[in-house]
Image 1 (spheres, protein in one colour):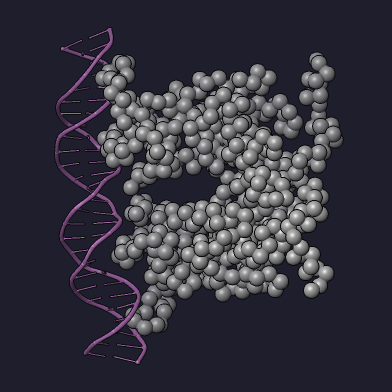
Image 2: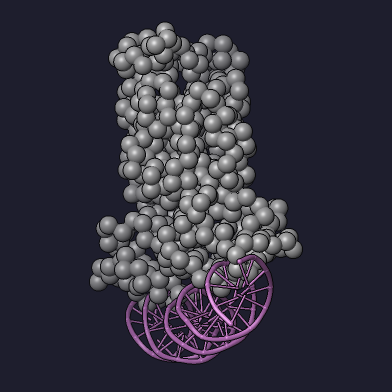
Length: 246
Length: 246
DNA sequence: CTAATAGTGTCTATTAGACATTATTGT
DNA sequence: ACAATAATGTCTAATAGACACTATTAG
């Protein structure tokens, strides 16, 4: 057995004794979240004004560096950041994509794991952290801004994903406060896919899914009161047998 | 203006002068790829026997550490690793998910960006690197193995993604050598979704898509010759108007 | 009453699946 | 002729969309 082979087949313990992660060039890892909600007949995204370099003063996605002592997983990191901004744990969190390159951050090779979350009501004060400026922007407003890093692209990717979800599932319901009316839910879908949906067709889907229960209560505004529904637990991965047509 | 505020609003140049990435605890970043192909009436996945700690001797996904000097993006890193194993640049590469935690690798907080690629023909020698042992496994074989790290889960995630693609697009065509017959393409779809597809229905989709051109040539085996098709360029994001039913 | 909104009845066009039939090759 | 496989013809059931109609509230 050669010397090299002997080293290769040493114990894991031995190997780890001589391994030092700090020897390797480090990579900056941030976790950022495209946080969406439905408010005032619009889909809104939460943005934070950066208080630090780089891109200081620019609007950016809520997020931050991975904290190895606090985060036992990437989802943890995302949730931690979201709770810090909204004091709510989002009912829906999905990983969108991870971007990384040598030149997206002047501090070094940097990557960002992008999540997207849906949460009810923008009213949960986005300003818990008094130092930072935080605001909900409509998608169009956000698109018009030049965000920090490559966050514009991140928002587009998240939005596209939610559009697909709106076409083939009721996932968008998590952007609403429950109980909610079917008109509200339909409206969220319409905003995401950018097209009107027939009331009848939509209700058929709701019924076929079996995902919702009528609470018996109803709204009282102008017009006929609307029944208030809740999501039955347990049905997170339901898909339409046939997508909404584009 | 307070001292703190002054520091916050200094120039980016100043900020970077005092910034040292090495101060922060480093994260291990690997890029791994679920490389799939179609061969002998089966979907196969490429696995490499690990020659190093940790999990030495276990089968694992091809991949490796991000190399800041070589990789200008995560896709770059994935392509670099794939080309090293197969000497082919895959015609289809998609990011699946990123996993990370403090305990998936004994060397420290580690994350892996999982890609999945489709490439034609397993015959491109998977053994370019003579030191490493590499083999194509059928999905069932791979499932029966205890792979290194969390690579079993990665394969499942990739496979699930390709199943969805097979239900709503012709993306699986990239697992085939072109030109190909419609029967071959249909077979790949069937294997991915785990269900037989009507020949007629499938051909209707092919025609409706406009994605393929008949080369005029045809196979000669036993039975009636099958027309050979090629993918028209430019049509990478076509989706069925109506998914294949499950 | 009217306005406004919620919810239903029903027709039609589309189309995926099923399956029988025809087509084209080798032996 | 027969076996084997590819490709097409055609029927049917399912259903999304369209849109008219009914229901229920406020003022």
